[in-house]
Length: 299
Ligand SMILES: C[S@@+](CC[C@H](N)C(=O)[O-])C[C@H]1O[C@@H](n2cnc3c(N)ncnc32)[C@H](O)[C@@H]1O
Image 1 (cartoon, rainbow, N blue to C red):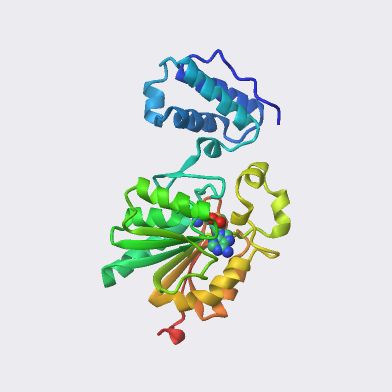
Image 2 (cartoon, helix red, strand yellow):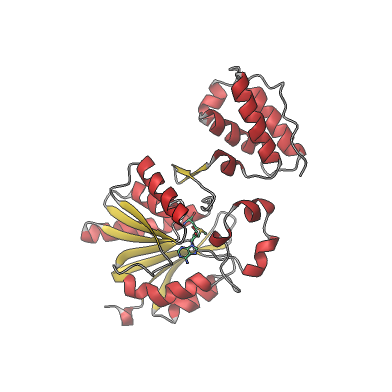
C-alpha cells in the first residue's frame, strides 16, 4: 500500500472526515467513509451525533496533525481500531493491546446465544458462574456481565497482556467486583466448576494463516488465530476437559469457524455433550454452538 500524503487543508471536522474517506476509497480500503468516521470520532473522542452537530467546528493544528498521522497509518494497512487502541463490543468500549484480538461483531452472536442460558440459571439459582476461555479483551465475559447483574465470570488467557487488558476493561466498566482474569493454558490452573463455559478460541487452520487478510495477519496476534493443523486443537481440549468443570445443568457456548460445526459437534458428542443450538453469523455462515450434557450422562 502507498504511504499517505496527509491532507493538511482539512480545517473542519467534516472536511477532515471527507478527506480521509476520499483517501481511503482511493486506496481501496473497505467501507472508506465509515472507517473515516470511526477513526476521526475516536481520535476526537466524540460520538456520531457530535460528528453531525459539530461538523463545522474548526480543528486546531494539533488535532489536524494527529488525524493526518492516523490516516497515514490506516492507509498503510493498520486497522482503524488498532490505531485507536480500542473497539466497541456489545456496547462496551474495550481497550486493545498487541496481544489481544480485536473483538468482532460476529462474536456478539455468541453473547446473544449465551444470555438466555445465563438468565435461566440465575432464575433457578440466584447467580451464575461463567468461565471465559481465551478471554482476550474480556469481550464475551464482560458483555454478559453487563447484561446480567447476578452473573460472575473468570476469564483465562495464555497471554499475560490479554489478562491485563481484560482486567482494565472490567474496571473501566465497573465490572471488577464480578470479573477476575488469570493467565493459564485453557483449564490448566482451574480447579473450580462453572454454570456456563464460553469461548471463542483460535480456530484458523495453521496453513490458512498466511492467506488471511493483511490487516488480520499483520495486526491480530497469531496466538489468537492459530487453531493447529485442522483448526480444532482448542476444541479437542475443551471437549475432553469441559465436562469435569461443568456444574449440573451447565452449558457450553462456543464460536467456531464457518465450516467447523459438524466436526465440533462430533468432538463434543464423543464426550457426552449434546448440541442444543447452532447459530449463524451476520453473513449467514455457521458461527456459534451451544452444548449441554446429554440426559443419559446428567449428574
Ligand atoms: C480468537 S481470540 C478470542 C478473544 C476474545 N475472547 C474475543 O472473542 O474477542 C482467542 C484467545 O485465546 C487465547 N489463547 C490462545 N491459546 C490459549 C491457551 N492455550 N490457553 C488460554 N488461552 C489461549 C488467545 O491469547 C486469545 O486471546
